[in-house]
Amino acid sequence: MNITGKLEKDLSAIKKILPAEDILTFDFVSERGLAFALVFADPITDKELLGEQVVRPLLHYEGKASAEEVGKNITSPERRSEKELKKLSEEILAGNPVLFFEGMDEAIIVGTKKVFVRAVAEPSTDVAVKGPREGFIEDVKINTSLVRRRLKTPELRIEFLNVGRRSMTYVAVCWLEGTSVQETVEKIKEKLQKIDIDIVPDSSYLTHFLAERPYSLLKQVGTTEKPDIFCAKIAEGRVGILVDGSPIALTLPYLLVEDFQSSEDYFVPPYRATFTRILRLLSLVVAIYLPAFYIAGQLFKLQLFPVKLLLTIAGSIRDIPFSPSLEMLLVLFVLEVLNEASIRMPKYVGMALSVVGALVLGETAVSAGFVSTPAIIIIAFSGIGLYAVPNLIEVTSVIRLAMLLVAGSVGTYGIILLTAFLLLYLVTAENFGTPVLAPFSPLVGRDLRDSLVKYNLGSLETRPRTLKSKNKRRLGHE
Image 1 (cartoon, rainbow, N blue to C red):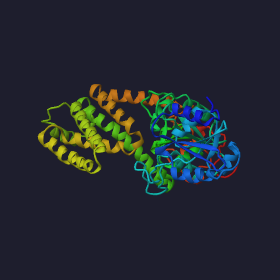
Image 2 (cartoon, one colour; image 1 turned 90 degrees about the vertical axis):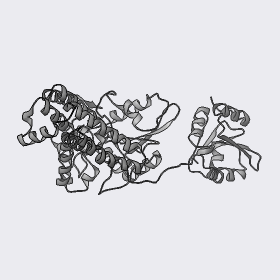
Image 3 (cartoon, helix red, strand yellow; image 1 turned 180 degrees about the horizontal axis):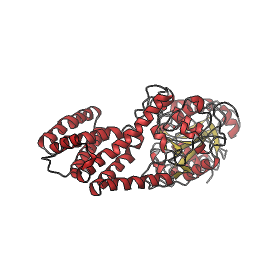
Image 4 (cartoon, helix red, strand yellow; image 1 turned 135 degrees about the vertical axis):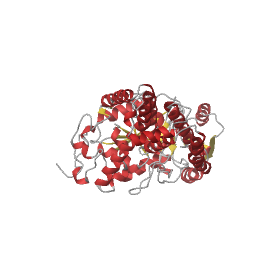
């Protein structure tokens, strides 16, 4: 339905669409006698700016009733005309006032939205000792400005979509024209446009709809809170997604090796970056398998332990009333409860709870004979190891629990079979035509230079072949 040009009728129509009490109308008349009406959402509109840029100039307006002529007198740099009532109501709800005036079947949308945002600061979950400290915030316009500041090229494309029937959340799709695969860009935009959901409060809501396997246990969408990482991934040929209201950006296609890398790896010598990447992988492997092999060794394969270690373990578990499997699961359960409680509770109380849980509760449980000292040490070390790769903590904690269950039921054979199943799943998994386990499976030799091993910058003259970018060279000329 379009507006008619009759002011009272148009205001009545917009009020039927937006009957809420915080949708206000301000009527005024110019010196020539032309009637105007501003409709705006009170909490999210900058009324002072609206008065300075719209009302004050139009009070002295003496021209004719034309959207073009009226628009020239509005000093706001953000303005455009629209006829459809539905689109006008969406703009009002987004914080952009709409100017109606008598005798014109077009209304003018004015960009005087009031934005409440926190300052750009270092993200708490992606801390770096060296390199940029800026992190994304909850405003998509500021986030796109952080991207644009780093990629000052006309090839950068940013397309805004509205997702969510009621929230109408702004989603910005970012890519480099000629570098990203256009088929991937179109497929991502198509998936976003097909999302039929009431509200999108965070970017994590979109990951289910963007994933090739929505019910997969494994992660399928890359995430980051840092503009430098986001821009670097776009420059490699990926597509980035920014969501209004979320500081976490999404990147596609996703490769598993990404989560073993850090932005700091590119600001330290290559040998140091290689060491830390391999250390993260080893920490994760030990964290997943150590509890499982400890249980399997006690129940099925005592030969796994050296003789002196076996005697030490035997002495510590002699009076424990639980089986090795139940004991390990009990300690793991307590660790997970303490972890959740320390995160959800107020900051200073959470710190005290961590100390009490780690020292008092653990020491008391060992002294009372409920659990053994090796079990607490192993689970504690396993918990620390998982946080070496924080972006995979949800997946790896579930895999660790599955390893514990099969180790207690079948022993080492169960661990081997579950490992084979996971490897088979990883080898066959794809994300927008890109193998998740690349560049290891399939083996892409040149891409190994920036995988777990980090070569110097001069050796990374081409973009990852795995991403199939048409613009292959990023250092020097052909």
